[in-house]
Length: 140
Image (cartoon, rainbow, N blue to C red; front, side, top):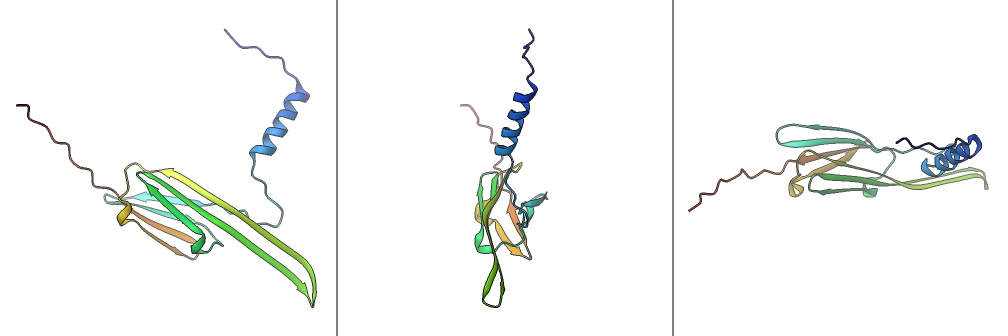
């Protein structure tokens, strides 16, 4: 049986507007739009992640690895003042956070994982956890 509903152009447009306003991230003109863009590759022994996080200090980046789940988050701080002599003409501040979480195909050996941050790029080397081979039990 098909569900039929009445179309109300004004109400449906208002619903779309409200839903779009609260679902979309707010971006102010002149403020950087920081996103974490990533490349993930793998070989037989490990995963390599290259995440671009420009304009962030390494102290403000947090990486959490649990099983095959990897979370990267960063606190973004940007302060800018424009002065002319002793008179302050403009002051802008932006504080926020960005994050990405993704799953890998295999669990990661957290104790051997490494992270480096240079020139706005976070490099993660995530060794794959050695999978114990299955053992057949002999029934006695």
